[in-house]
Length: 67
Image (cartoon, rainbow, N blue to C red; front, side, top):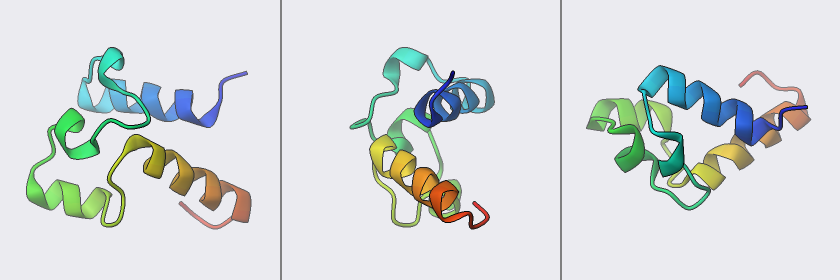
C-alpha cells in the first residue's frame, strides 16, 4: 500500500517533471518544483519543505476537510 508521501511524490514527478531523487522531506519546494513567484504563493503560502507539505496534506486528510 502506498503512503501519502509516495502518492504526493508520484503526483509531483508527473505534474512537474521532477527527478524523484531530488525530492526529500527537507528539500525546498520552490527550488525543486521550479515555481515562479505566483505559483509558489498559490501552492505553499506557509509551506517551505516537502515535510511541511506532507504534514499539511496528512492533517487535512485526518480532519476530513477538503484539501
